[in-house]
Image (cartoon, rainbow, N blue to C red):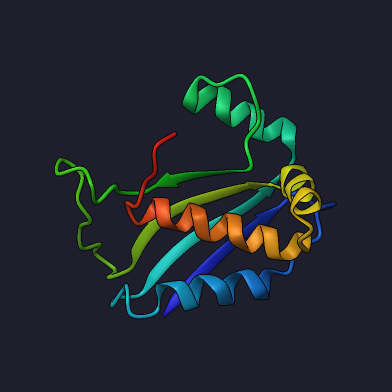
Length: 131
């Protein structure tokens, strides 16, 4: 069972069921135990705060990931939780950045948000790219 926890700033409309379905599809066959992931949709002001605090970057970005554990780091491998739930971590998406990028790429905003969430999910799973 895959549980997706959502938090959104109230004025950002997102299709939670579509996002949850995309996460479940992506994780199918990749995780074998009950799994939990958090998705938060924020504005640029909050994203700037997160970038400044956690990455020492003075600009907003489209998505950030905060893994509970990083499987690429031997000092912090995935561990068995007492309740058997694998908590992957948190994905934060900037709604204004998603709108901007969707417009530039001629995509639907909902599709762009799903793309960003899945990109963040890959980071939670330890799949990284060069910056």
